[in-house]
Length: 391
Image 1 (cartoon, one colour):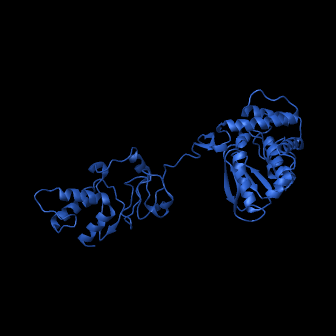
Image 2 (cartoon, rainbow, N blue to C red):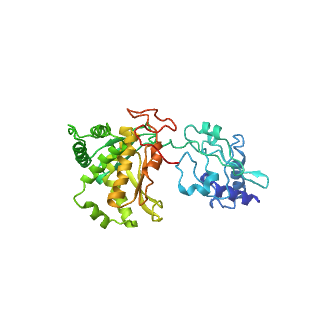
Image 3 (cartoon, rainbow, N blue to C red):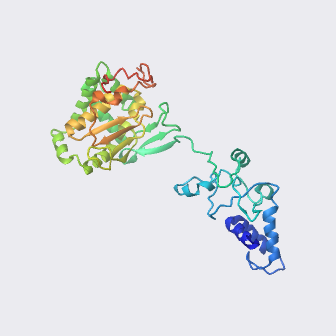
């Protein structure tokens, strides 16, 4: 390329050099200036040679991509969804870049450490040493990633009055989410606790709290097999309905898309006081085979976290709730708990398999359960579960 072509490529691909060139070019007193495209050939040549050759001692190549839209360094900004086509130019260091050769000339920029044109972020030299330079379109991956499962706070339940504080690494079974109940949540909790106390013929706890609620659930489990634990919960659910409520529900909520989506939306709010924050997701896992918002995802089940009991999760929640919706309401529901991260998914409109063949019966005791036997042992189901009869 000619000298003028080299100069235009240089100034077009690196706006910072253009700004510096214009400032220096216009700053010389006593001479007429016509901007960076002036016909003063000697001045242009001197400036260009300065940019080309004065920083050769630094040996720090500059990125000259085939497009002038070079993305900012990865350590300066967070990646976005529009960065896919810019991936070859995303480096973890502003100076760790590629070179462009044309006509035997290597175009270089002034080194920031020697020319003091740019102030790099702390740790720049260390990052450059680790990552090195990128040549001929090669790519360097960003080593400054986000920590896994970062902490966050989420409002939930009625009017978003309750709060859940998720710590860093909250998907780990040992990590504990901190929940703050709203007055309305405490009122529903007290109502449900009273129903449990009446069903198992035990005194009502003196305080209304989630810890007291979990203690009452353990009393419900004591001395009962899986069927007995399920039947107590089923009786409590039925007592919450007015007489003939199941027939009214069947008439109002047939198995249809709008019915399944409405029940998912209601569950997200009404059931949140017991299990924590939830979100409605789209899925095609239903008997209708349609894509719809009928899946409710529990981020981390509060009941399982506080009790730590696999048997309580399967016998008193999963099995009882599935039977209640399928048999009493006539609305298919499949609940799929995740024993690894304590999340759970409700699939409205999906008929569950027979409980004896459900994979949930293969879950082991958790390490946080006070009555655990062989917790976490592979192939050793929780001793409170019925026998698994699947393949």
